[in-house]
Structures are given as structure tokens and as C-alpha cells.
Length: 252
Image (cartoon, rainbow, N blue to C red):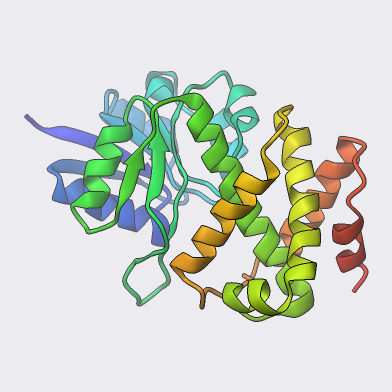
């Protein structure tokens, strides 16, 4: 049987997943820049799944354009993702919180296993396993929410604290813990506002530190750090939330 998947966006991350799907026997149909999804959907109307591998800044633009025949087959992998991002489009996608790094010219580097939840979760997990990337299939939506919030806490805390102290995550926690704790407190409060949930702060911090220990040399400040800070402050303002540490770092 000829099984097909569609990958929208063939950057570093999309290419990793495409290779995994190829290794597990799928035909991969790419949607690259300048190609309309609807045109591909006419050729591939019923793929097993459709992986949306564009960056977070382009996600909503792409979700608006999803062909109707694909809407129940979506897989999302973006950073800074929360249920509100797909609920506003009336979608129920499979979602993976990616905890491996892929840079140009380098092999994928796993930090901790990547949790995945949804109808196509096992296919995604099998594809990653075929290329030696570990993942965990989650039991329910509550577990997924925790994992998405955790990833947001990790990314925002390291990126934003990195704007002040630089260095790697091991140094951040060992040498600049006061800064890290002040930032993570603000970040978790923002996540509570965005999810409408009361979150277990200590459990999130403990899980964040576990991720730090997965790769203590992971650099704090990615190239999107300043943008992430401004986006966090914009969301805080929209939710009438004051985040004193983030506001202070923004003035540096």
C-alpha cells in the first residue's frame, strides 16, 4: 500500500521529519515556498497526515489556508504553541513538543524525549524512532498541555534571561539563579493567563531543570530571543498582566 504524508515547510525541522517518514515507508509530498497547499491537495487529497513545519510566526497564516480535506490530519510542531492556537481555527491536530535540535550541517541532537499527542501520534513517534530520535506518546490532553507549557517555560526563560546574562543553560542555573527564577516566575504567570489554568510552578521549574540537565551546554539566547521577549510583553499587555522582570530586561 502506498502511504503518503505531506510536509508543509522543508527547513531543518521539516527535513528531519520527512526523512523519518521516508524511512518508515511513506511517500513524502513537500509543500515548499511558492507552492499553494490547495494545488498539492488536489494531487494528494487523503494523506495519512499533514505536518505543518513552518515557523511559529507563519503558523496562523498557514492554518487559515488548510484545505478542508486535510483539516483532520494535521500535525503541529511549533514552539510557543498552546491549545488556543489551534482552537481558534476549530482544529484538533496531533501536536509534538520538539526537544531535539537540528542545525544546518549537523545531526539532530536530542535533549530529552519529545512528547506527542493526537490521532497521528504513533506514526510520528515511529518516524522519529526510525532515525534514532526518542519520543513519548502522551495519554491525554492534560498531559499535552503540561508539556506545551513546559516547553514555553524553557524557551522563554532561557532566551529572555540570556538577553541579560548570556551563556548556556548550565551557567544560567548555577551562576545566575536569581535572574532565572525571577524570569521563570513571570513566564509561568503569563502561561497561566494564556491557558486560563492555575499551574504547578514547582513542577514546571523541576521539569525545566531536568531539560537543562539534558544539555547543559545549550546556549540560552537564540536569534529569536528579543522577538520572544517583545511578544511575551505584548501578550501580557493584552491580558492586563504586569511582568516586572521581563519589563526590566526589555529596558537593557
